[in-house]
Image 1: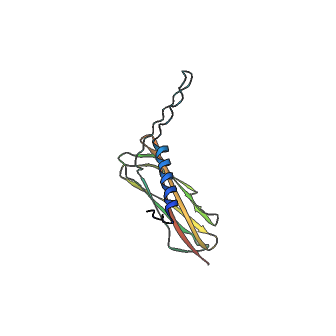
Image 2: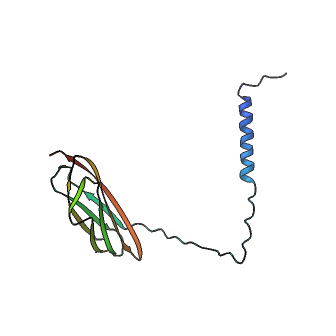
Image 3: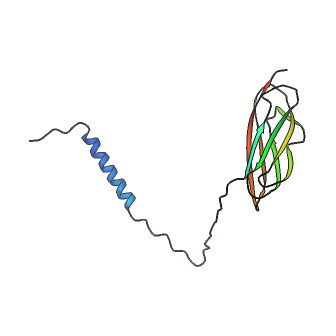
Length: 159
C-alpha cells in the first residue's frame, strides 16, 4: 500500500542532501600547504595584549549660551602599576567650537601609578546646536604607547 508523500517532502529531501553535502565538505581533508623553499623567509609575529591603564572622563557644562566662554574638563586616571610617561591630552572640537585658552594639546607629563591628573580648556561656541567634544590622551606605559578617549555632549543655546 503506497502512502502519498506530504507536500513538503521534496523540500525536506533537498535540505537533507544539502546538509549531507555540507558535512562532506567540512570533513574533507585539507590539502597540504606548498613546501617552503630555503630561499623563502619565515616570519613570526608576536602580539602582547595588556589592559589599558588610562581612563579619560570629559565634563562640560550642561547648557551654554553661544558666545559665552565655558570650561571643558578632562580627568585622566592611571589605573596601572607603573607611571605613564610623556602623557598628552588633545581636544577635538567641531568648527563651531573654538578653544580660546591653552590650544588643542595639553602636556600632562608623567601620571603616577594609580594616580590622576586634570586637563582643562576654555572654549566658546559660535552658533547654537548640539555638539560632541572628544578628548584623547596618549602616553608611554612600560615602553608601550597607550591611548584612551572620552566624549561629552554639549548643548549650545542662542544668545
